[in-house]
Every structure is written in C-alpha cells, then in structure tokens.
Amino acid sequence: MTERPAPARLELLVRRGDEEGFELREVGSAVGFINSRPQRVPPESFELAEVRSRVAGERRCILKNTATDRFLLLTAHEKFLWERMDGHTSLQELATAYVLHYGEFDFEVIPNLIHKLQRAELLTLRPASRLRRVLARNRGRRIVKAVETTLFGLERIVIASRDVQPFFQRLHRWGGFLLFTRVAAVACAALAVAGALAAVGLWHELDAVLAGFGGSAVRAILTVKLLFFASVAAHQLVHGLACVHYRRRVREFGFTFLHGFVPTFFVDVTDIFMTTRRARVVTAVSGALVHLVLGALWFLAAARAPAGFFQAFATASGIIQWQALVVSLYPFCFIEMDGYHVLVDTLGVPTLKHDAMTYAGKLLRGGAGVRVDREAALWIGYVLLSAVSIAAFVAFNVWVIVKATS
Image (cartoon, rainbow, N blue to C red; front, side, top):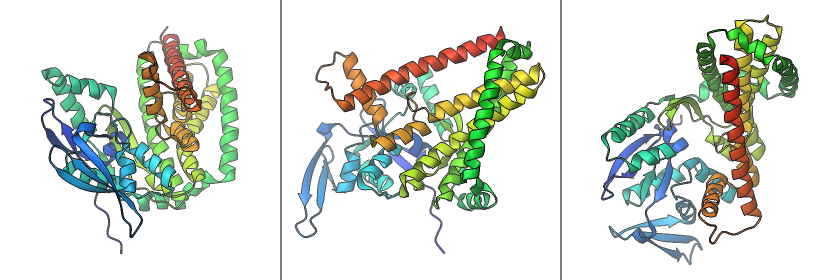
C-alpha cells in the first residue's frame, strides 16, 4: 500500500521591512501554489557558473550566494526555473512553462528547489497582489501593519483535504462521467440556446423585470451574490471530475481566502499537466460551463415566472452566472482564469500577462529600448483588449445596479 503523502507546505524567506534580514514564513499549499511569486535575490547577491560533466554530458550550474559564500548545484531543469523566479511569475506559471519546455512535469522539482534556495537565502517572496505590495512598502505605519497582519492571518485560513481522490472517483462513477459525454455536450448547447432566447426576451423588458425588486433591491442583490458563491464550489467540483475522467489525481480540495480577503473554493488539478492538451482544455472549460447551465436555468425560470420579486431575482441570478462564465473563459481581463490558461497553453506563452504588462510599462515610460515584432503586437493586443473589457464590465454592472435600484 502506498504511503499517503504529507500535506505540502512552503517555507519562504520574506525580507523584513528594514531590508536587513529575513523572516521565515510557512505558506499553506493552496495559497502557496495559487499566489506565490518567488523572487531571486538581486544580481549582485549571487554568481552563476556553468559546469559540464564529460562523462554524462549533462549541463549543470554552480550557484553561489556572494553574501554567505554558500554554494548550490543546480541541474539544467532547476536553472530553467531559477531564471524565471523574477517576482512576477507565479508557481502555476512556472509549472506551465516547465511543461511546455520539457514536455513533462515533476511535482517535486519546484518545492524542492524552493527549499534549497530559501535555505541558502537566495529567494524572497514578493507579495502576490498590488494591495499587498503597497502594504509592504508602508509597513512602518501601525494601521498598515495591522491590515497586513490581518490579511496574512486570513491567508492561513485553509479548510481543505488532500485525501479527496476517492470522493471524486466515487462521484465520477456514480454519474459524474455523464458530464463528459456527447449527449451532455448537446444538452448543454441546447440549454444555452434556450437560455439565450429567454434572456433576450427578458432584456427587452429589463426595466419592468427589475422593478419587481421593489424596495429590496440591495438585499436581493446581496442574496444573489451569496447564492452565486455556492456555484463556485460546483465549478471547482466539475474541474475535479474532469481531472478524474482523464485518469489523473485530484491533489486537494477546499476553501481559502484568495489574496487574503477574497473567499473562494479551490481544487488542485495540477496532475492534469501529465496528460494531453485536449484534457487540459476540457478540464479548464468544464468548470466554467457550470455557470452557463445555471444561468440558462435561471433565465428560463424567469421567463416563465409572473412579474414580481422571483422573476427579478431569477433574472439577476442569470446575469451574474453568465458574467461568471464570461470572466472565467474570456482571457483578456487581467485575471488569470480558465480562459487565460487555455490561451497561454495554446500559444505556448505561460507568462503572457507579466510580459505584456512589463512591455506596456516600458511604453508608458517613454518606449526606450522596446522592440516591435509579432510578440510585441500580442502584448499590446492583450493589454488593450483587457483594458477595454474591464471598462465595459464595470460599466455594465453599474448600469444594472442603477436599473435595479431606480
């Protein structure tokens, strides 16, 4: 019998506010693998020399910490990862780049490398979000320090299990496999068409429909949001079922606070990297289709309901579900959701967002030394489409809220 693996954890060195030392922080596996963006120390703090074995013909590198005179031996695979630990590339992006470059993935290579680097004081942890970076820069203020401590505490709240593979296997065997049949695909398409027709009919009478909220619009919208939160769990469950369908292992499932303040469910299906691109695409898309189905059902229910509170509630629920579908599958919105991962997997550019934002920043600072080629055109297109999409998304939501409350 195979021994059950211990829960994964990351221990990373975080530079203190005084910039004169480090502190060791343990990061839960869910938060670590979703948010962590490891950053190597500045170039003046290390030296890298290549050595080649004349016997095995392998290229390896000696990495030296110039401050402590500690040395590490890196394989070519580890050097590939080390060069991408720039503080902007997440662990998920590192894993994707590794798979695209080598055509395989070892689940231990990244945590083992991080363990080696943090012991040698060659790695720091850059805050994952802009908010966290702002807080880190102003850590000397008591209020800022309190907020950062609160966010860090919330990040440590992880309710999860790594022994979920048997559950997903049973769920798949008891009917979950039906979700990945041609009949299910046809039914989903038919439901989408029916839901779209119902939505068009409701759209033409949107003012009258949303008037059904009466004086309870704010309370009703909050309730819709809470109900939507439950569908996020279903979204993640279907991701896990897809992983099992392709005979790979679901590594973890649970609940956490993304970036320290966004409550969300998560599922670790990184084992899907070991199979085909088709399987990775299906796994990514299938979870988002939960919102397509639920949104269509809400629109159909609203179309059949008499004018009043329930019709307004169902319509708002359908709108939110289909918004979630678009956000999940639409790759151009500065959010690394399912559609973004499908895009970068297809294009073979796992750091698209980071590269695009870096290029755009150089252009805004005067454009000195920037190149113009096909890759640059992709970066510009990504930034422009994302900016326009975010503006349209915000404007649409403001318009719906104004309609519901007026």
